[in-house]
Amino acid sequence: MTTKMHQNNNRVVLTAPLDGNPRPEDFKTISEPIPEPGEGEMLIRHIYLSLDPYQRSMIAGRHGAAGPLGEGEMPGGEIVGQVVQSRHSDFTDGEYVRHFGGWQEYSLSDGTQTFAVDPEQAPLSTYVGVLGMPGLTAYASMIELADVQAGQTVLVSAAHGPVGSMVGQIAMRKGARAIGIAGSDEKCRLVVDELGFSACINYKDGHYPGSLEDALPDGADIYHDNVGGDMLAEALSVLKNYGTVILCGLISQYNDPSQAVGLSLASVILKRAVLKGLVVYDFEDRRQEFFDMMAPWIKDGTIKYLEDRVDGLEHAGSQFTRLMSGQNVGKALVVIGHESL
Ligand SMILES: NC(=O)c1ccc[n+]([C@@H]2O[C@H](COP(=O)([O-])OP(=O)(O)OC[C@H]3O[C@@H](n4cnc5c(N)ncnc54)[C@H](OP(=O)(O)O)[C@@H]3O)[C@@H](O)[C@H]2O)c1
Image: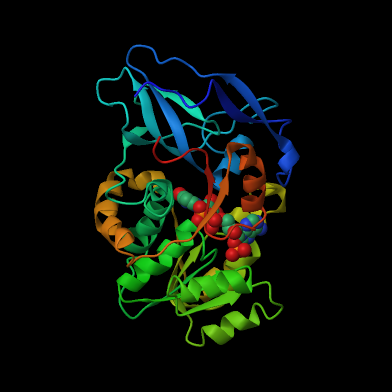
């Protein structure tokens, strides 16, 4: 397969260094010639671009070794794509791959951070969502760090997102009860009706955090925190004594870390709580085991997932803006190309 879909490679770049909440006008699309693969390289056509909260920290230079991105620089991100021209001995034309290719239509790879994926085993988009890094995060949280047990109650924030939805559903597969926290009635409806959680609390409905206590009269054994700040402090109030808190994300602070709210350590003492930090990269060697367990359940619909898709690379900036202001419902994706040519 050597046919290319376009003459040019469109890429989304910053119009200026990001300051605070991202806005659509912080991004623009530029066009460059499609690169030619050299010996040992392959050209990948991007199909799905994954938008993830960590990309906000990466743009700001707070994630990984690289510094902040400036004007004209392209954010990084994982994609699912198809090899259109391979000069790499391990990859063939037409093969689907997961690759750290960035916010663009095509990328070159020398095989680094590029992994074959199989559309027969699971829908292609899930390889960067519930079966990808976010799903592995949930698996590490529930199976490895929290060691969830039948009969326990698990509370999770951002319950509709790829991490939160998998935290709840893995907990339920283990015989635990999942209670979600989400930012709208519609999100909560999906968390209960589609994902099967026992309950979901809308923290923006004016009854929070009282509604948290109403939903959890006996408390939670485990709280998986995707948000940080006030939500972490409030969730601690319904943690059972000796309960476990998995510290996973701080999305309430990514746009502006100076707004960080400190957790009262008195409440940690009062609850005799066990706090565990989670970094998904520590669990890369568990990815295959996780995938082998979850992929059949994703394929047969036992495990459900929500996706928030937008069509067209040019909308990557506005979709990222939606993600970082809490407007997405489910895994934030940009559809860049068709699955097959
Ligand atoms: N530690 C690790 O290794 C690791 C790995 C992967 C992900 N994470 C973290 O896990 C969390 C969930 O990630 P995800 O990929 O599943 O994304 P996600 O849930 O889709 O994240 C977006 C959601 O976060 C919620 N949110 C709560 N407070 C917010 C705020 N102040 N601003 C914007 N959004 C807010 C919103 O849902 P509501 O409206 O329902 O609140 C929003 O829709 C993130 O914090 C992420 O950084 C950590």
